[in-house]
Image (cartoon, rainbow, N blue to C red):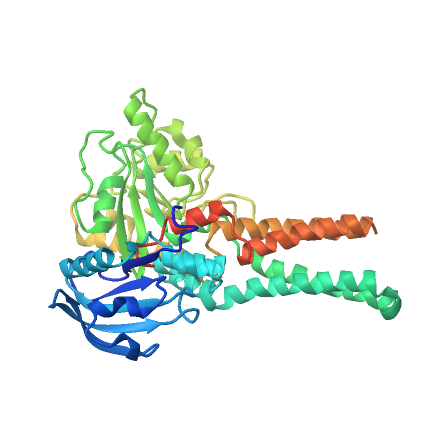
Length: 490
């Protein structure tokens, strides 16, 4: 990042910069004194009160550029610890750029890089690393869960849990130092009691966090719903139906979709990314093969996987490939065909499923039941198989019922996971796993040895890992990854 060591005065539009709006906010940060701006404001800058809104005009060569509301935040009591001037201007994009250019031309001010205001807050210790990550998550949230956790990292319960872990670490360190330096004063029994108690508190703090870990937190930040199946299974038609729009090209020619297509769908105030993939089959076509490889790459990390099968065109040879993936929902098309039960039974038997076949919908994952036999988990949907029929390209009432059933299933999974308040950021997930394992190893170490140098070394490693999680230390590669996602003016 080019701005890590910069102390330049910077300017940017923090809202409404790309489209016309009623009001836009222009931020200026890093200047030494308000006096330098006297020539462009109609107000006497000496009379500007901190944190008060002042109506005035921006003037250039005796011409009024705009009528604005000006607010001054004096450092260090500001968002990033620097002097900040916020100008609420009329939000026409031409007007915004004219004002920014005016300040850049008249004063030693440059346009800011994305995230530079927030980076200065980190540098000046107004925010720590986890709070900056929370801000990033909050600003870029695609769903209520990300929004909530972003705020929780900024100033909520998750941030408190991280600090509780740090506090537990410090308490255990104090207990160790007490046993080394003041053993004669406190006695061996009391010293050992304090070490055991504080270590148990430390393990409890990290266990609470580990219980909130899911394998791929990023899958909930932007939940992906992927449709997988062979060519002509009906994926693209179903994709169009869910979107209520003929977005994907559909035809009877196998292999029409050769690369995945993505669109957003909104349901119950949550946003999901719907992905239509290339049909999977054995092929010698290099372009189609590349598309199929992408299909499995996308499916691997998807939040919700739907397998669409046309039992009259399905290849038994692909069954083993399907079994390697845990699908959330299976949809068999063409259930109105007279030979449907025979064809679908053959496929289900190859998937190691036994039992009666009744519904269109086979919910997953498909797994052994309690008595040891294997059965599909059957949907309780009121939709009868004989009224579903093939997944068609027309947007009929039948398709609407199918869409609602599927969307409710997707949201149900999302809601179930959300209720557990999972930790979303992969850096945090990885770091918590490391801390948990390090504490386990440390516990074994102190049982095996009384060598304080070995114990101290092991414990110092834990402290370093906790500091990185809490955000006391900030590796450059982590900073690079975070701030490249920030918008201009934040």
